[in-house]
Length: 242
Ligand code: 6PG
Figure 1 (tube, rainbow, N blue to C red):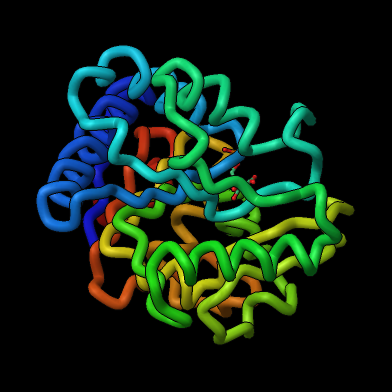
Figure 2 (figure 1 turned 180 degrees about the vertical axis):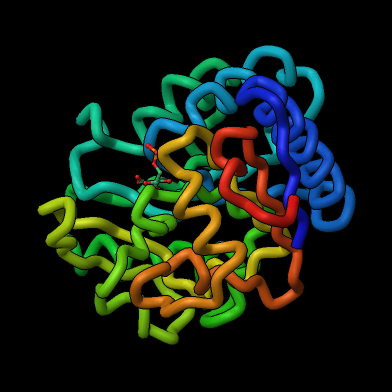
């Protein structure tokens, strides 16, 4: 695991954009494509905009396939939609074609949407239980959740390589999320976390071996160990070892 701390969010985003492109080039060279699971929320928006502008000539974007590590159970036109945020910040500016966009079908009932997404990934990878994304981009909530693996939810003990739907009391909404076993098959994992508000969650995840029910992001232990944290100084401010 690598922990990279930067003086500003901008420098962290640039480093992550460099990492994204390098990881993509390696995947394309090895397998002819780059399968990436995007994170949601607000943190990655500037990163996506940076990739779509300063990095538009740095990668064979027509070989990139976009998935989502989790999605809010809302229409694709809803401001809460992780798909919509990525569409505006990254996919449309890069003219990514529909065949390379694997969005969660939130027009289906939640459980069907999750099952359909699992099938989509199985068809894409040609396997029932080996679904190794080339890169997982993940965020971290101030309660130490990642993707939609929220504290004290049933999905935390789901040991299947799959996508699940669940109602989350904490946000009073349905979410669709990849399970930790699926996320942990990724060839590379990058957390993008910034701001003082996340500092305690970052400390808990990186420096305390605590209860995964309380600190779900600790479930992210990629099988190949390749995980990098991209932090600004504010988010890293409570770490004792940097
Ligand atoms: C989501 C995300 C979630 C997010 C964290 C951080 O759908 O909200 O996937 O895991 O990464 O909640 O969100 P912010 O970046 O908005 O702080």
